[in-house]
Structure formats: structure tokens, C-alpha cells
Length: 214
Image 1 (cartoon, one colour):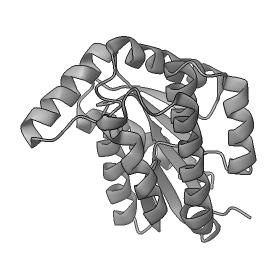
Image 2 (cartoon, rainbow, N blue to C red):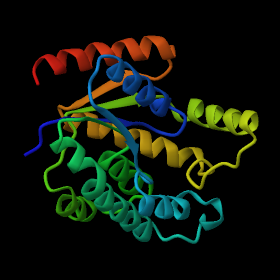
Image 3 (spheres, rainbow, N blue to C red):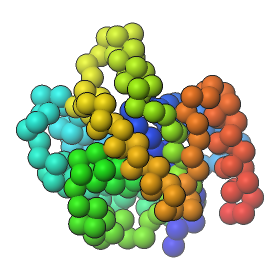
Image 4 (spheres, rainbow, N blue to C red):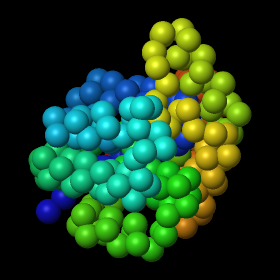
């Protein structure tokens, strides 16, 4: 029986979701709540090995979209069994930087795979473990690419296989996220162009209301 609270953060590259996930974890820990922050792909040791394949730019144009989708689901299965479910059962607030909706947005909308087939695989893996709250930090594709390129220059890092995709790919992914938000009542869409502080305050307000009902 799941006893904890499951919160996920979604959005296209450079939207600021990782920053907000970390800030929420710090806030909840200060309140004395048992909290864990994880991510997909790569939330486990096995998942890190899968992640290394998925983000490596040398596989652009080589890694088949279906292979990509199945690797994400393999990562998710391990992540659920090893980390997410055990912590939820122990009463933790589990915060996850990406989850199922990233797979649907990136593989079904971005890569244009058959959404029914991907959802079928997904349903057989997640075993009904759905997020209580999904924060979608929304930015447009132009802002996304500007942010990731600036970050790469400042930190002197290589862009990932997804970050080097064409603008139209990121546009489709964003459209996918927004479509999913309309279909699911656990989504909260937040303007990612707001300040980090304002976004954090908005997230905290929503989480606090939810905690009162747990």
C-alpha cells in the first residue's frame, strides 16, 4: 500500500525543472518530512548505465526510436522497483525529475511513435504508480535552446543527444506535454519564464495544500 506522496517534474530541455525539484526537496526536508529526490533516466546504478547510452550525442541517428523508448521503460522499471515504490511505501515524499510523461512527450510526440503501443508497455511497468502532482514547467522551444546552449558554454559541457535535436523536435515535445496536461487532472502547468523564486513559491503553495489532505 502506497503511503507517501509522489511528485514529478516535467518539461522540455532547459525549463528549470531540475532546479525546482531540488528547491522543493530542500524545503520539505526543512519541514522535517522524509523526502527523496531522484530522476529518470538514471535514478539507479543500472539506470545510470542506461542513461549514458540515451544521452550520448554519438548515438544521434543511430539509436532507433523504438530502442530508445524501450530503454526508457527498462530504466523506469528498475527505478520503480528499486527506489520509488519502496520509498513511497515507507511514507516518503518522492520527487522525481522526469517520469512517464517524458516518455510520452519525447518518444510519442517528439519521435512520433505510436502512443497506444508505448502506453501499453508503460501501463505494464508502472503498476498503477501515478504521480499525485505533475509540475510541468513550460517554456517555448526558442527559450529552451538558448538556455541549454548558454549552460553548455558557461559550464564547458557537451550538449546531450536530445539537446542537439532540431528546434522542431523540441516544439513537438512541448506540444506533447501541453496535450498531456489537458488530459490529466494531476498536472499543474507553470510559466517557466517566471523567476526561480516565483516558481518555487507557486510550487510550495500547491504542495502545502496537498500535504494538508494527505
